[in-house]
Image 1 (cartoon, one colour):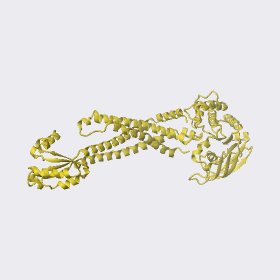
Image 2 (cartoon, each protein chain N blue to C red):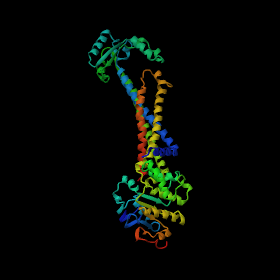
Image 3 (cartoon, chains in turn red, brown):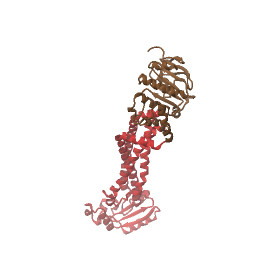
Image 4 (cartoon, each protein chain N blue to C red):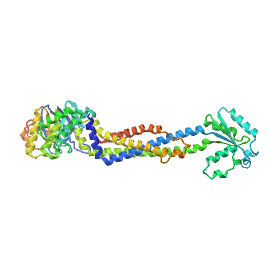
Length: 305
Length: 229
């Protein structure tokens, strides 16, 4: 098998079919960029989940003066020092509790002011509206129900809240978006595959004279099919290369420059370059194997011995 | 070399078989004319030898191999031992004469050294020395057919199949092509040639096989074309 001959045949084939080759390159590039993007988005959501679930705590809000009217459990007024001490003792006795932090109403007010700095909510709240609370860090964040059942209705406790509940909605949303991305990319890949199949057919048809002679003189079907498969794989590789550039560029413009998401959302730790580079080999592999396979399937029905 | 044992072939959606119960044997080194009107089954006969088609019933042996039992991936290797020439030459218009012949060797993976050596030799044999770098479009019909014969013969096949090789050529040019095929036959290559050319058949006085509506109606050594059409 002569490499130079095969390469020149591939070059001729790609040039003869330039517009279709272009269409293949672009559709492969877009679908693979989306594939990589979806994979990275999934990774990002996972890493955020890990990061946040590690940080979230169960908060036990205790009654303040204002709650007496609105919450039946606090009908006897604000929490007393005895009650606080008892809650703390019970908490510490639980084996699933890792750490307990106390937050006074003043501290809670300060945190609130910080969090809602740019919102009109900040000015509408006064320190005595805030509740004293215990922030409980659990060894296993999923065991929230035990704490909830222990302290709901406990004297002096206004409510027990699991911050995971708040985050769960957010992560459900992000997960849903990832699923949508996967569905879209499945369609894109299908379109790319069909386009490749069609391109290979057109290519085989335009060269039926050559392939006919090849058959006649006894070229093996592998030898006849290989230029077409290599063409598809080459176009796919170029597309995959573009997809890689898009992923790297996307990460740069979204996180570091341009949108500067890292500056705007400091709470989220964005995926590093290593994660982005980590998906590139997969993108390249799909970019080469998928078109080659599509070409092979297309030719099986088209170029018979 | 070639043996047909009661071969019948019917194409899909056709009532009448293209070949019906044909049995014959062609020995090594023979020169055989295959005659018969259009639709008599000549092309089917040749296509069966090339294994472009398969028989319905009966057996075809070519070069000692039962083609029905030859697996698909071995077919290319079988075809390398056959040369084929057609009425319409089937040359690649964007390649030179030498490249056209070399193409046949390149696609079966022959080393470049061999190609560089054998291509001029075979072009010399068919009388095209000095025209290696011409394009097929610049050549006359007879010269184009010589290129096709050179390509068919460059592998030194045991068997040369020619499907109306003079069909597009004037009588004088045809004579030249027949001389060439005769020369190739004298090197020991078996030649099977389908033709409508009465003059050629009558002049050459070789074995004649006549098909009519798919049946073998005549097999005559040193025969003539037969009745007028």
